[in-house]
Length: 89
Image (cartoon, rainbow, N blue to C red; front, side):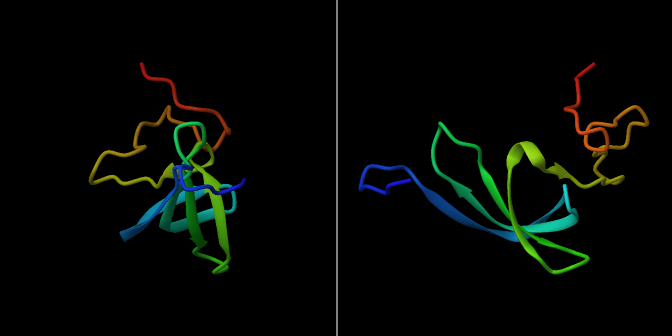
């Protein structure tokens, strides 16, 4: 990508970091990169188990289960485990 003065781009630090499930396991997203409306938002994540830093598009990450907030608590929610998107019912 050639960056010109009119190319939209943004990097934002997340404070506090977001706990996410990624293809490599649970992680915390510390930054978000946005190249504009034609691109996915990218999450800069540090994998909890290994400490590795990976960048994932938003289609590849999911919010971690949070019972208190009711996030991904339905027993029929298999969206990330099966590699599919959740369907609203």
